[in-house]
Picture 1 (cartoon, rainbow, N blue to C red):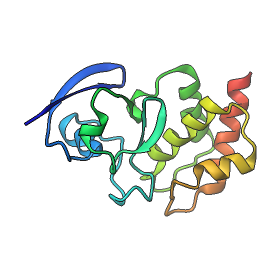
Picture 2 (spheres, helix red, strand yellow):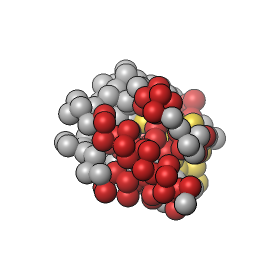
Picture 3 (cartoon, helix red, strand yellow):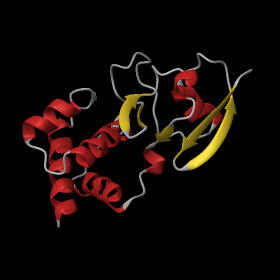
Picture 4 (cartoon, rainbow, N blue to C red):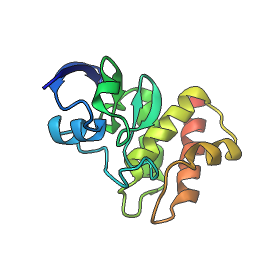
Amino acid sequence: MPSYKLTINSESISVEASPDIPLLWVIRDMLGLTGTKYGCGKGVCGACTVHFNGSPIKSCTMAIENADGGAITTIEGLVKEKEIMIKEAWIQLDVPQCGYCQAGQIMNAAALLVNNPNPSNVEIDNTMSSNLCRCGTYSRIKQAISLAAKNIKQ
């Protein structure tokens, strides 16, 4: 089986896997990082969102062979002060209902705020439209992103 080198949450690792196994299964099953969720398996729902080389991607649709040499950040790896502020806004506004999609939501929101520290409501809506929430907590998600942006600026 081929070996792949990755940096996961700032830690260099090597994994042996079939070239076509989705990155999601490497993260969850091989590395035990279960914060990243399986939702649809087709890149539609966003529950499996991680950062790959700094950009949000759906890990269920990326084969491990395409991730070789890349830097991946999962929800467990959001540890910088600004990233923690995003998680704190989620908690403060009691965003999750069932919580299943929230790791993917937070990962997408973190990437948004890195690239745009003061997003408008339209920019938040456009960015977050690739993440689905079956419980419909969209208004609280938007409020949490706005609150995090405000707290980060202070």
